[in-house]
Length: 105
Image (cartoon, rainbow, N blue to C red; front, top):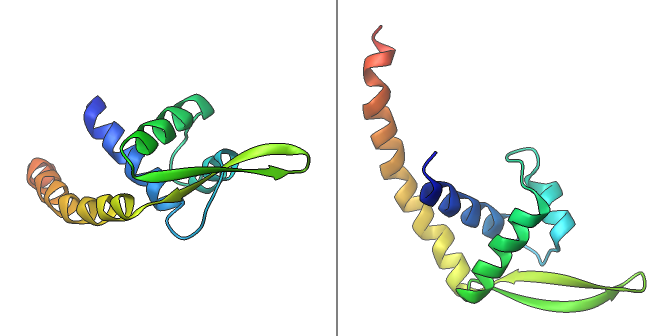
């Protein structure tokens, strides 16, 4: 898969995983696991990229004696999810065009 396409998909997956409530790294990985495998190192790279792009904010809170980072989607992050939904319709259309010959074999 094209690296840029994959990066965009992963970014939106992470945003969608925390869209409805603040979350933290381990929970994000756990929530995404039924849909996509994501390593901790990949997740934290994505989270940093999304924070830099102002698509999410980060706060630290103590949990069982340790500091845990919680992530929250911003308005820009919500907008990106909505843009993705629109873009994905075009991707599906292209995919259907590409496989149409396979369906007739």
